[in-house]
Length: 464
Image (cartoon, rainbow, N blue to C red; front, side, top):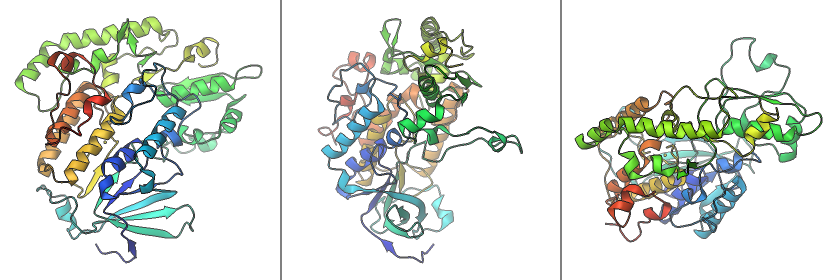
């Protein structure tokens, strides 16, 4: 497919997005002088574009950090606010001099394959060649903020890394029957992504004195309901109604009956009792023998949550096990004061096997989002440098479908690629590809029973 427009060749590698994944990719691909296209005027991704005033991280800060750039107050047990996270990400970008790669106000509107391979061969099941072929194979159309909207610049690259995240910037609105949708509603209908773009005072004014209905019961919906309750304090305030089709498990914090949450799902030992693709006979035997233990762990956590939170009182007790929500990344951390407001009546990341010379970072869901993005970027960097080879496309597709089947068996809510119940094994796979030891700790006991942290994945002295 030949192009009929002029193209600019500024570097060999393009990175689309400057959120957590884009920054990690830029840092680990820095020797290729990448060009990072970011539609907004700052780094931070979803933390910048879609955060409420009450938005906080859902995990301890030490679990949300890069291996070579620690939080200055990583022992602080308070969950960081979105402002603190943005400061951390900006500091990371400054520390590793990443701003020189980023073109702000540059929105990618089209990505076009322009290689010499015919379309049918693109989806063939053979082996990959060099990921940096020495000549451009992708064209990227960019619309810049300071130009005429019709003035599109085209750039040519040998490899493209997609880091726009699983949320993107386009709200997903349900389809409604004719004359039964938002058009016949006299009030305001908006997606949470549109709400979070409002300024603080504008958002508060929008909610104040209004009868607000929030549809859903995951992180964004819970935070938005609390925002509405806070905006409606005092005389004239109206209650917020949550419309919940399927209740999901929420937890108040990361301590369960006095035990840290990581013991249940985030140690190597705990992950031996969960199903995973391509497991050995011994692993399968462990999985079958410990099926009762999985149920006990789930019930143990459920008992604490039911004791700690008034879920039954508000009709929010799920009918399914906690483990299913964890396995499908449906679990949410309930913010401080949420049920207090309810009591007051105020709340009622992978290389795609069939697309050549393109990688995806930041699309895998887990409780290790920063670590997963960083490991994926390390893996992609070593792949580009030909320190290992990809298996055939047929083998990669086979592995992909096996993982999908495992996730479907683990939870009825499977809708995406969530690695929560075998995230350590996923990291092991990346380490094995890179020729690095996946067992990261000093002795067997620590490796099996202690949580993995960012410092366990510092590889600069181990490369083979």
